[in-house]
Image (cartoon, rainbow, N blue to C red; front, top):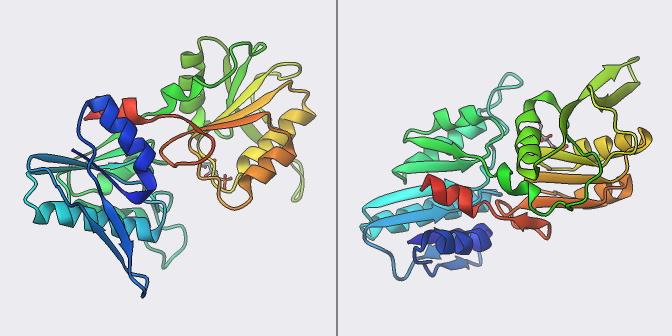
Length: 282
Ligand code: R5P
């Protein structure tokens, strides 16, 4: 049975379709003092797959409650799917005195599950923080699906070298195109130039790819740079379309032609589903 957190209902329903498993009814309640309570009125007895993007502190609490409710009901095996792992980017101490938040979250989540599946974590090594077996799945293969078929001499570019695998995956899925990443050249303390490392983009369509668009700063800077370099159309795609605050406005103002993402985070741009990749891992 697929058991959904409140932030992952579309993906959970698609995962139920993809696996042929039943989708549980879940009730989400908030008390007047702000505390949360979930209820799974008709839990399974054998295996429950909890699907919950931990996009906020509330979503984390909700996940722990779902796991506990299922354990309490005597479910034999609990698999936890984290379509998006919140706090995953604080995976080390950057300044003295800070926590490794990803580890703290992973330990808490591990207490209520037998196994964890993570979709495109920012750093795959966060899977080592869990006290139960944790595997990662790659949902980037589907990101090519909504792209126009008529891309002109396309270049798939990641904003940094670390995300080039995603550019490579999307390019392979699309079936043609060059792959590159942005390089920063510092001319002075205030002047930094960013441009694709090898590929010329003049007159070509460009697909910018990344694991996550959070504030949209990285991508809007890249879109503006591509415009200056004479790129034709610029599309932006990512696995996790967080699109916090005014990210969409920033990207639009920079001149992006379209924004695409998957349903690991449910947004208006979530045109691609991570369900098939998760179903394979189940
Ligand atoms: C960085 O390493 C990540 O891959 C993303 O590029 C980054 O987290 C995006 O953040 P933002 O949208 O806030 O620039």
